[in-house]
Image (tube, rainbow, N blue to C red):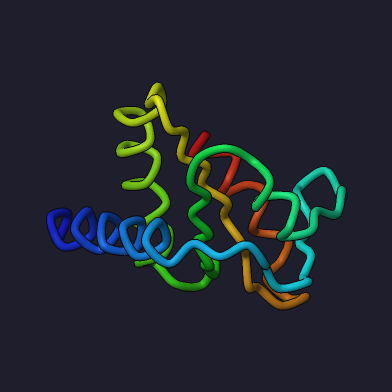
Length: 106
C-alpha cells in the first residue's frame, strides 16, 4: 500500500510540474490560526505545492497523513522545496476534530 501511495504522490507531482499554469483559481482556505490564504499566494512561492484534501471521519485519510509526515521527513531539505497543504473538507459537526489530528501528526 505504501508503494502505491508513494507512486501516486510522485505521479501527481510530475503532473503538476508538467502542467504548471500561471493562473490559479480564485479560492481561499483558512489555516488553524484563523488566517485566510488565497490559492494564488501559494502559486507565487518557489517549489511545488501539494494540496491534500482529507476528512477526519475517514481512517484511510488519517493513515495517509501519518505516511505523508514520514515521507516529508525524507524530502524536507530538497533544492526545490515541496510544500504540503492539508485542506480539511469536514463539516461543522466534525470540524472540531481537525486541530487534534493535525497536532498529533506534527
